[in-house]
Length: 182
Image (cartoon, rainbow, N blue to C red; front, side, top):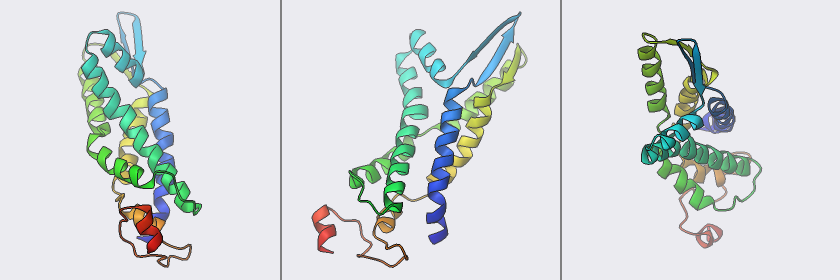
């Protein structure tokens, strides 16, 4: 557990960087009859909304952009605070939010859909994978490693001294008062 604790912050940082790359660059470029088109993930969401599918656009945005970013940023914030031995604001809420967002993150489904689309379109047009498609592959792997981290371990990590000794009992406190009484 000690080794996994030390790896989770660098993995989270790498995942955040890969998330930014995956969202900043085009997924793929399609060329048909001399016309070329490319889009980012956010551009795809906006075009789905413009095409009259706002619910699908919202679901794609929530499950592939918003929820992963919120989870990664909350995890990063908590891990940095724990590493610096600072009491993070909203610790209970953030740990619970991280746990509740887990089933709603669909990055691997997005990657699978993008690869299937890429393969199917190669018969009709010239398709060039973009930087974002490769970044999505790396992001799916990194996110899987970050998701393997049990958020309940945050309680244990926050309750350990720098030398690894338990400062207070490692149980999930119901309130700050219970934590202070321990």
